[in-house]
Length: 617
Image (tube, rainbow, N blue to C red):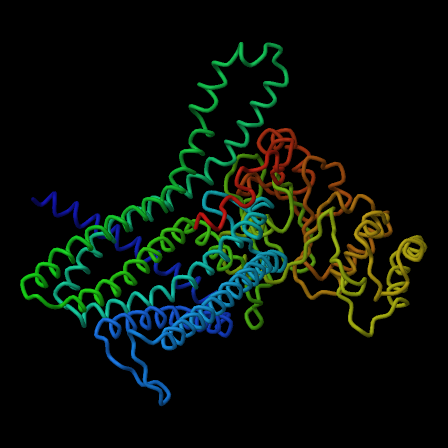
């Protein structure tokens, strides 16, 4: 008995936790979408409500006409008396009223639906813009659980696919509000007509909601599984194509592996199973709704019908109850379908808002800014390594890394160096400037790309470049427009000499007030000794970190104060350039010769684009 109680309690707690998280996500997206565009949402909901109202008005008018026709009463309308059973004029008036009501209803619903689609597109664009904006302006980029840092595939999915799904969910939420209001109104009418019977109906609704909940959970689970197996399924398809490319025996003579080993096992089968389960969630929800409808009609006919037969009256109440019940059940069926559809996108919604909430730049620390940092080694695997090293303004750190520097990995690298102090990590990330060998500029004017003030002129840039080295000035005037407010096409920017490009980039670093300047070493190789000396001298009031990978031939050229070796997610050794050279082979054996770069998109995910049509939802 105690075991049964504990199992029930555990299941109840699990259900409660899941329900709370689900409600929190729905509340979050409702606030972020409908409440953000509350004026547009109000117009959409108002016109949708009026459209439904005119439909109900039309049904009410038809019922009223039928009742009056049954009684054979006379009606006065605009000082005219009509005999209902014989008046063609009144029939025409009623017909025109029904026609106008339905036409107005059709236009209002059309207006509401088209505005809803426009708002969905607007919100989807907003979500995609927010992903790209946060990614481009933040130093801490969210990464999924189990990953050290994010990559372009994740950002693409968030901006392209998850943003589209978020827009769909907002559209589905809007499409659920009016049916919800209609359902509440129908329940009110049902309680007014027959409270005990309506209470019994609610009990049936409650029982069906348990099954609807389980269906929704399975839909979300299959959605997660579908994403999990999509990449593997794509890879298997590629392997099938490559294998067939080299097989000389025609497939009909060599078909056993094709049918049994390819589509009956592995990621392809799991992918299709998950996709089927996700699609079936809607149909399962519809099945439960239809069973509920059948059970409800049976109970009503059995209870109200027998009461009417015994009393010989009450047929009018039965009609009213059935009409109200019809509205209630139809709208409940629609709500169940929408809720199940929304829940299928729960993993994507959760991932999107995790990115939004956790992709940030730590706020700048003004009053209590960290000026001295300390790098510590995690292990003592290399002889002669320093246990710790303090760095401050003017210090040059050489980092041997197996992780390529970019916006994804910046926070990861800083955390590996300073992770023992969260305050130090946040302070460094709030005041950091970095440059990779693939230094890009924004697609705007030259002034905007360099972040130059309005009073800064072309002659000022020429003076700065000439101060670096005379030869760079000739390249500047020959390769770039002499108007800072002119746009520089990406193709032209990519063709200018590397030493000029990186010099212009480092001038940006000098103009900034950033405490940390992080540079890829291979970007500095194009500099002459004079250019390198110029920038190293100007950066003497910053903490400069130069990141190298497998090529360490130029280490001594930058006069580093310390060489730090990072493997995976920890610092495994520190020391002088001499120490590094003496232990270079051992370090290579530990770190590896090839840097761990951002994964290339070798295959296209099956679900990399639009996997669901709106009719499925």
